[in-house]
Length: 74
Image (cartoon, rainbow, N blue to C red; front, side, top):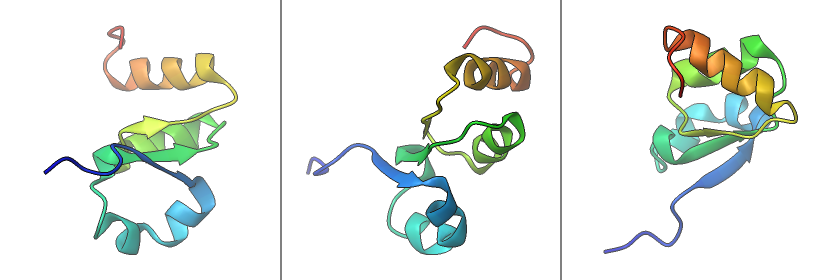
């Protein structure tokens, strides 16, 4: 059966506080952490395997993702 939604966006503070509960029902690759604007936070969410990140600084977000992928364009 098709899922009702494909992505669930959760504010990063709530997501951090309720990670276990949220990921017990929603796979991390279907979660969007928002709004994440610091490179260290972006890296931490990438480490957790979230599928999506919303940022007010998309250039920083893309650069952080690219740097973690060994500099490959993502």
